[in-house]
Amino acid sequence: MATQNGVKLTQKTINVNDLTVNTSVDLPAGSMSASDIAVPTLKIESETFAFGDMTDGGGAAATMTLGINIPEGAVVARAFIDAVTGFAGDTSAVMTIGDGTDVDRYNTGTPNVFATADHIDAGAVSGTIYHAAAKDVVVTITSGADWGSVTAGAVTITVYYYQSV
Image 1 (cartoon, rainbow, N blue to C red):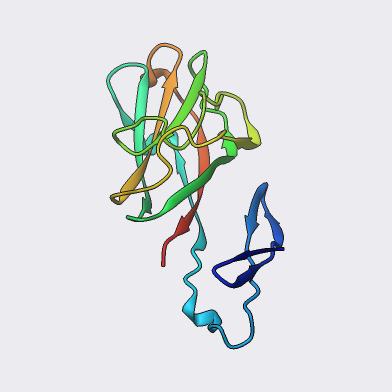
Image 2: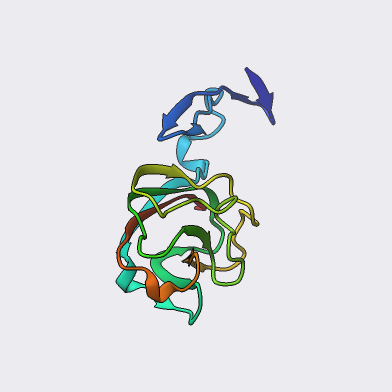
């Protein structure tokens, strides 16, 4: 147990889909109430889309701006790719999850979405985790040669972030 500014701090760990959250503070009697402490809230937002929903970039890549908006002041913890129905028709398909400026802000590497999969960890957030301004999540899928060759595919993107209070 640690003490900071007269407040005794303890740690409680909760696992939420591979994400660990530390959540408790013990206050000395009469020092302050729990309502005096602002605790960020873990938000989980998901969206499912299919290959036909994406905008063909005129080459091998297509993009999709999701309805997931990361608000100003939020801190992104992780992104996951779920319920993948392979983006088939070409020879390969890889994904990045970004914010429209930084193409892979919310993932590391280029996860393979050519094959069907239940769950893919998108890796650590590779860009700035703190949001000084609100940003929409933008997914880019790059096929082997030409996005126009892609004939199938669907996926669910889930983003975990802490909302400031």
